Length: 139
Image 1 (cartoon, rainbow, N blue to C red):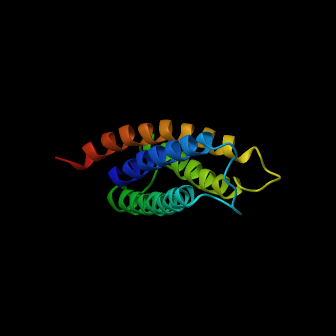
Image 2 (tube, rainbow, N blue to C red; image 1 turned 90 degrees about the vertical axis):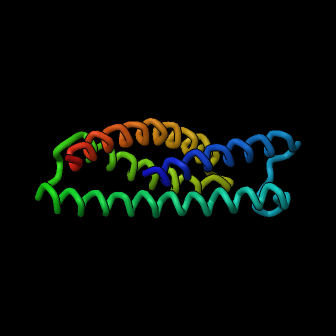
């Protein structure tokens, strides 16, 4: 979970930096003619986003298998709905990121930012509820 939070914070910082770079230019960099600096940050942001999606999916599978193995069923705490919310928001955010540079979808950037704001709250909730669940495993 720590890796997922670290990746999210890294994406937040890089996304903020890319926004700063975009606002410093008189025109918004396009996919056709982005500046080399902006393109490098965009690639890093995208790559870290892919790693975040894979990490969240891995955490989901570990959580489901671990819970089924220990308790025999799911749904013993609010951690499951919080985790599923994180998975859904992460996947939705990743999808919206792929729509940002589409000329007919100007809403994609604001949707991406909104989903990420909700994801930040969901990550806090899943971290807290996960801590409570882990305490059940410890003697």
